[in-house]
Image (tube, rainbow, N blue to C red):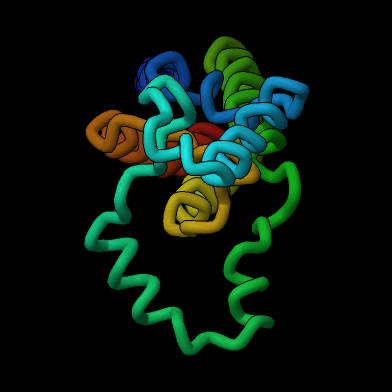
Length: 195
């Protein structure tokens, strides 16, 4: 039974690694503010000053795309919100939470996998419970990461933090399902073989 959990844990780790590789995490970081960012922000203000603005070439800064139907509905619904509620909606969940979770979730899962390998080889009760504790922490961190990403995706005013990471929904389901089965079997195995 411990070997089955080990193989399932490896499958879960592989699915998680595939999620990380195929996501846009490397592109989800905000760009550094430098002179290029300030000049591009200043161009639209100077371009509309003179009468030559109507004859300006299309190479200048393009206008933003029109808002989608979802954004228009949200704006209509949120137009009566007080300023304090608008500020609370646009505030980050916890500053730097996503970066911490990007590291801590896989780290706890990999360290737990190492302890489970030790439990599989020697059937030491302490190793099994340490591995189970680490997989529990990894599951909680993964759910927190998923919630933080889903929450930041739903915020229209979160552009200063960069876009939210996007993951393949099918792989998220595969990874989450495998993690759930791994968690349940690890608990069962630690209880049965630890006696």
